[in-house]
Length: 636
Image (cartoon, rainbow, N blue to C red; front, side, top):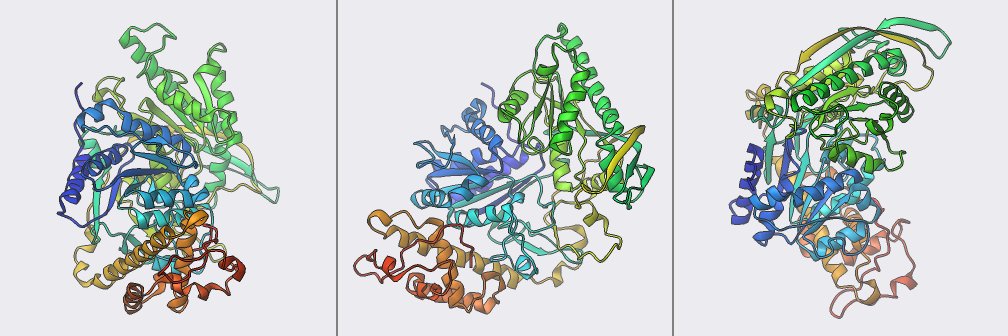
């Protein structure tokens, strides 16, 4: 069996892992910023195979954002090519929240939701085994106010689902022996920072960027320019369709027709796009994409001498991304009208969160000759490894750069069954609106490493482009009336910037930005988290009888809250350098278990004296409170 060569970022990661094994580096945090489609799913296999063989870790826990990606993660470890090339015999399993998730294998794969639903179970696994933690698509996890100073300084903190994921995964990050964080983008659509990543002041006001050269971190970068040079991804051609749209506003006034295109976004941009995606314009764009994939498949059939209807891999497929589930069903009905009735339900399928057997349909789209057309909303936009996708119909209103980059990347994977690299290309059809044009310019000119603090909106004042493209599409008050397509233009996407360690515009002034204090603060905050987690692990292990193993994340959060009380109700993120040093010194001399009485007035951590007396501490250890606080308690 001929093994495939490692790409440059894969070789770079192998070198970092070897340095960890031999002790040449003290880094235990690895950030892999790999352009979508560049091949980051092999990185956990490379890391785990060497770290387990060297005895640095015992297990791997790979966390993915969605259940549909767990199968792909299992496949990465089972790939016979890489098992032979890397000489590894590791196997991992897609686990649910039942005891012993690894089941005798080398690790397990779970989801953000799975960890949030049972944090005790997963933290217990990290206590029992030295673990390599892989967090896939880490940009889904927002920074938390307790450990991130910028987030702590903001007036309001988003306590939604994503923040709940961050809170559940944070103890695992602090307990893991080695951490490998993967992402195809280092920006979040909402402009917030990303959990655990180190930041420094950005080149523009109210911005900060990932500190790619932070102390204690190893960064593996693989830009789209590098991937194109190594023929790891395909070049992208955009088919931009212009048109006009008319709608009725919330006051009943008929507006339009307005052009979809324009040099800059204005007050008609969003409603025109909203209308176009639900009326005649959408059918015209969908038709262009359908004809493109039909012609591509016909050419490849002819080249292979295949009969019409004969199944074969590598002919090319179409991915349709819709704005919502109702519109997705409408698009599916439209496409099926263009296919012979006897084939329609086989050729074109729908995969949305409310679709029965959606995961099976996604697997068939990835691994089988049919279906050749898949209509979805968000299930398949990120992480879907389907190299046969050659055409994407981008019928979505979302215009954030991270989201669109992931969507475009569904078509940039090289298909080994489609012939030579030179004969393949990615084709993306989209509305020719100024927000999409802005996204394209950013891909060609900017590194995606920024976090932004949005300015407050004031009345109806004009918003900056970078904020405008994050706003949701109008859903209330707009009644789409009609739209039509006008003209199509095609453009090839430029390779884009390299993932530089420093931005060029910072080189002249970098010497004045003395970051030693911030580096020390970040190190001390991480040290505090490790010390809290270590005491929680040690004290949980000393519990006897039925209480053993019940502390989990609840004990960690309770200890964190006790430390905050000891330090004057000040979170780590808000502490000065001197206060952080004092907190570390205090933790070196004291046990948090002896100070849990400070939480007695907090209803989140209160319980009766009778229940405290139910558990007796081991001989020689001070009495501690019985760990009964649920793992959902807030940190600090």
